[in-house]
Image: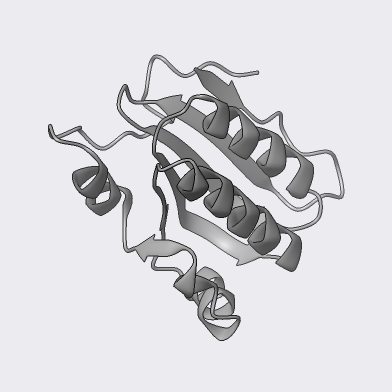
Amino acid sequence: MTFSSSPPAPGNPAFSIDTIDCGEVVVIHARGELDLAADPLLGATLALADAAAKPVVVDLTEVTFCGSCVLGQLLAAGRRITGDGRQMLVATSQYMVLRPLTLLQLDRDITIVPDVETALRRLTRSPIAAVDPATDTTASAG
């Protein structure tokens, strides 16, 4: 399963969201400013990842802004996924993402790790090479 965002419309903050099925885990890579404009795409992407019935890693290591609507999407998806007995990990060390997650105490419900490699090690039995959608030949533009 691969899914890519289309280029942002003129006047909208730049963001992209890509999903890669790594076999045992679904990885969602997000970049740029995740605000109200990104909310519908992120919601759809999280729903697709949830439907895959696998653990999910949400890579926010390249996110420069994370709005409240996005935090709500992450919280709701995390509750759905963990409610089904799976795990969802958010990978980030970005202050602009960590600060609201911790201020709102969402880190009590959302497991945060510093990077995708750490998340994949926690979720898989066998090592998976880090996935970079920019160089992944299985990803397709949508």
